[in-house]
Image 1: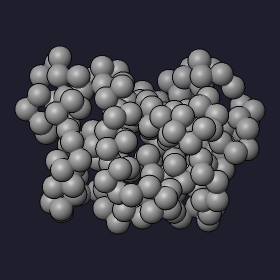
Image 2: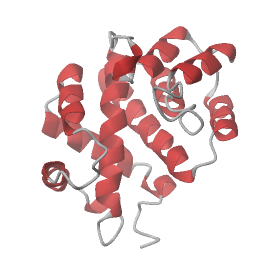
Image 3: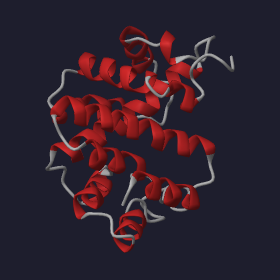
Image 4: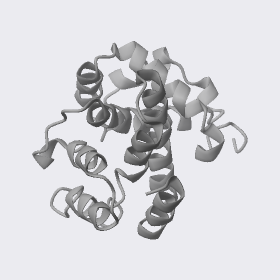
Length: 189
């Protein structure tokens, strides 16, 4: 599956602009980590782009996420390593994170959403104004982005083998590269 084919499939399955932006954000982080680790950028990027393909219609374990998505991807001929990564990004799936790509997807997913939330509360609404101390400060504020489990962010960095501060900084940098696509370049503030 090419990136263009994946994008068509994602937009057929997802109408929520925020969810589309989330998948683009995770794709950007995955591509950046693939470059850092010397891995295949297209494969890792597809895993990031496709990881929540079923989330709009199946937003919970009870509703079938990410199992419905992995089945959909298999029917479209997506390679099994990507399907495994999609499954493994949910702790409850029973699919252990074994590959570096699987661990990177888990690490990119929660933190990218959290970093975006931090940017959205900045007066500028710009990723350029987000840094590691700002993210760590918001992580301590349990009322902020209440649905994001801080322990998952910390554990995911450990599983990936990247110190937390370095992981946060890396994700911020990767997201800055796509800030305009995410509407977080400060232009609409």
